[in-house]
Image (cartoon, rainbow, N blue to C red; front, side):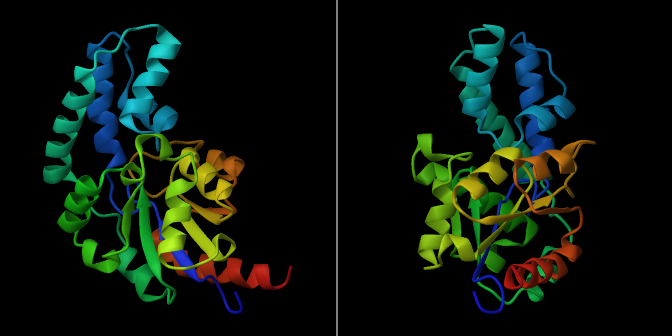
Amino acid sequence: MSNGFDLIIFDCDGVLVDSEIIAADVESKLLTEAGYPISAEEMGERFSGMTWQNILFEVEREASIPISASLLDKSEKLLDLRLANDVKAIPGVPFALSRLPMPRCVCSNSSSARLDTMLFKVGYKELFAPHIYSAKDLGADRVKPKPDIFLHGAKQLNVAPANVIVVEDSVHGVHAARAAGMRVIGFTGASHTYPSHADRLTDAGAETVISRMADLPGVVMALAEWEGVL
């Protein structure tokens, strides 16, 4: 890494598309109906970055409420409909990418079908295709906070993990990137952000946190230069 990073990896939900708030709304209503009252705001704060299946496991463990398997399918169908209609782009992504010369890819816990729907709807798919990767394609047990999807993305572009910078909005995602041996910039510019969001990303291992995509190129350059003087 002579003059910067060799690859930048973006999470999708809450980083490229403002989808986490929609998921939190759908999932909080389903959990409340199932006997576990929780607001969309609490969903974002507690479970951001987790798959719906793992959220259900966590709720079952915590509250001893048997969660029906049908909740899995119900959420997926409702969420797919809402995302297809309502998801919006995180502003500033094309600007940031125009000033970041290195290769890029998307590494997400969302399914390939959902990634395709969301990125196409907001006009970002062509900015990343074909390098758009879903952890679910690797296996249900290999989603973040495991590092597998980030290592997979780096391998596809033949880049060593130490030369990768990741942009993540969730604690689970930051943990996954750090476990992969990558450096991380936290992002808090989506609608599901909460007061302690930046602190939690930093505590998880993000080197710095931004709330606007327009700031990303300057921060990436600064981190690359900082690495060079260590």
